[in-house]
Image (cartoon, rainbow, N blue to C red):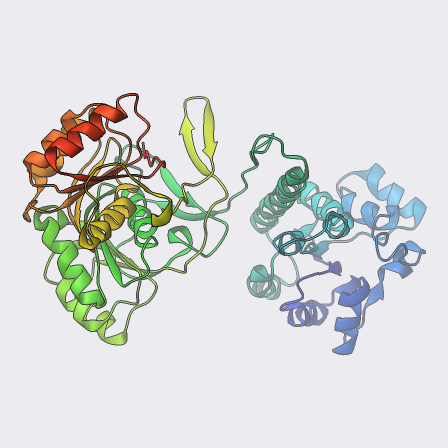
Length: 511
């Protein structure tokens, strides 16, 4: 590749810019720059040619117009191997530009501000930046396009080692990165502006997805499937920091996300144990270690090889309990040094440090030929809005069991029921084709006594048989959405069986 003689720098994010520019100057590269970037470089003693000197026009319209000019675009777009292109440069006195170092107005940062006005959004749409980036990326064989400070160090190393040029492979890598940046930028603009005209309850007319690949996975759900993780932010499971253990698998990530979403339901210290995306243990307690013991007690057999999540930093006592059984992975907001030391001997155990947040605007599922999108199920239950429909009122203990069970059943695959005591999952009936079978399956799975437990159902009971089955196993209180055409029959059955029953008016299907 030809040596780089001239570089244009125009940066919103100026991190590392001075060091990179100084490295270029030491290699004999002439710098062209704009506005604030030029001032920064001059303030650090670097010689810089203003874009206005190249174009013959001053920056105008509050900086809207500065780089859109044939003297800039021509210098970037000219194909060096084309004699007619080089003749055109010579005829019009245009000098070639060999490197473009540009990043864009922080549109997404501005767009994330609460209540930002449309006018401010529009002003933060970059025009010249994307134009230069795309021009340089299109002419990647002759022009190196640099859009991220993360590349500065490696590029300077390569330039120094080669005497001032970059390989074709590097040019191609940089060009692909540049096109991905402008595509993501345009997507972010289109999505944000569309919100001003949404008519379908917040669902956009066009769904734009631009996510960088965060992690290449060994395989998907099965070894013959190829898989990767794509994510933009650093929150939630997708953005978690792995502290130790084997590489994460596709199934690990699904289970970790199921565990993490469940554990976010609780304010007290809480523990969740997930197997195949369904909870097999979950509990809350004033002490995290005790919450884990209670979660584990619900189904020790299924807990073997499970995935865990905690809503508090993992302490030494909890880590000691966890280390007594085989666990695939753990997600927590942090780990004490003692906990890390205790778990370090389990070399394959994956430990993830997770930052709260990362809630997606939409929950997405692929189907053949398309994608289904919905708003996430963030509904929380307010006890004051529940309807007690039976003659017997729930006791306070039953209320606590019902409310806990309701939080958990939301995260169990439907048809789903949960047997619960205050602060503890006793058993779950998941993924059954009928609700009465879910009740039977949950009871069959129970290790702890069911007598005196409460039952939470993710959807209404279509017939009394589900309640009759629950009462047979010792359930004394039930929480369910209601809404069946046979609600009165079901309520009558609850009264006949001496159950307390609460209707929420909220359904929590999870297919």
